[in-house]
Length: 394
Ligand SMILES: Cc1ncc(COP(=O)(O)O)c(C=O)c1O
Image (cartoon, rainbow, N blue to C red; front, side):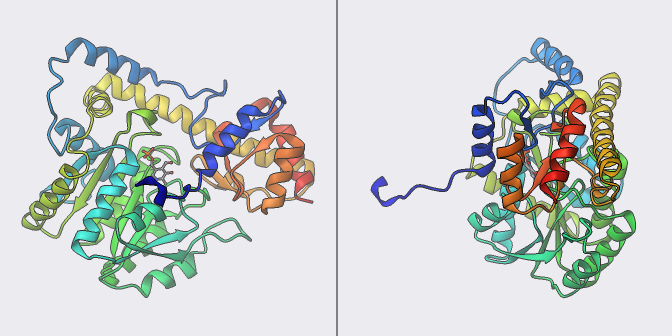
């Protein structure tokens, strides 16, 4: 059987992690892997999460099956967090899924059931896993203009013009906030225009919300999602609790669907649950129960929000410090965009030879497309990093 197979390509980011681990230089800097890191370079368990886990351990009475849609308290808490009161809940359904990736997967399967082979439009560039998830679900993928390598901002006029050309059979995948890999995001006014375009064309918005709270705060980061879902009859949202709750390995996320009315919502949800049943039957509970416990308890929620805010402001501070240091040392504004970007990543716009050079000469590791994880910048090494980037960029 297996002799028919050839080796699948390895994951580039995992390979980079391996290279970094094998590098003996004590001065090496890891800006590659996409997990939050604190000032000690570790990915901590949030204290609200620890406390929730203690409570769960003490109170849990059964390990019986959870049900296909998952933890109900988690579901309604996540809807409050993401959608607020932007849309009438009678039109909304949610199913817990394994991570943002699992949520994207089951929703792509749903799209393919509704319209086999339809096209999902993704930003150029986008998170590299979007394409395989869509294609493995039977969908076609095309790109709309997004990142401007000159300004390192969004090519908004071109983006909007491309979205305006789409129709009812198209799906538009949008990053709800904290765009990965670029770090360049839409302003509130630009979200308004995107929402108006989607309402005009009838294309289906599909929002990937993997970094809620990592950009400008929980409410500000939800603006685009809420604006879009309140402007259109149908929408999809894939939520991830990996980053904002630091629950990466618990694999917790949610697939949210908004239908034109309650009856259509029930029918569509029945298909979504049927997809889940035929894939992994039911989701695991632990991550969902942690999130439910935190969001339903006033004290734990306050503690979580404070921790999340601390992570967010640390990333903004590192951005500002790196941009400011480069400005002072080069007398140029070439890297000011790092301070304007939001979320965990910035795409520096360096070519692959420069990325390789930074790794070989300076031990600075970043993804091959020149994406850096700003949370990986050691604060005391900002000056070294600034010098390395300036020397490589000459
Ligand atoms: C844009 C984007 N979407 C979705 C995910 C999925 O995250 P997870 O499956 O770990 O929850 C990620 C993770 O890196 C991401 O960057």
